[in-house]
Length: 65
Ligand code: SF4
Image (cartoon, helix red, strand yellow):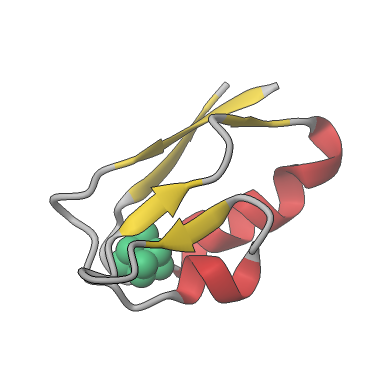
């Protein structure tokens, strides 16, 4: 499993993570700030989570092995 860390202070609420990996990411309905739906991803889910990390315009996401 790979742990996912989201830095809410860097999140600009763009929603790219939700569009890319809706099983892992959501957004707060009021603020738009990222909400993690799970704290870690298995190997099967890693590609989508990595794509979300790469696409995040705020550089708010990181994956910790
Ligand atoms: S893509 Fe990045 S900036 Fe946009 S909502 Fe997700 S974590 Fe926040």
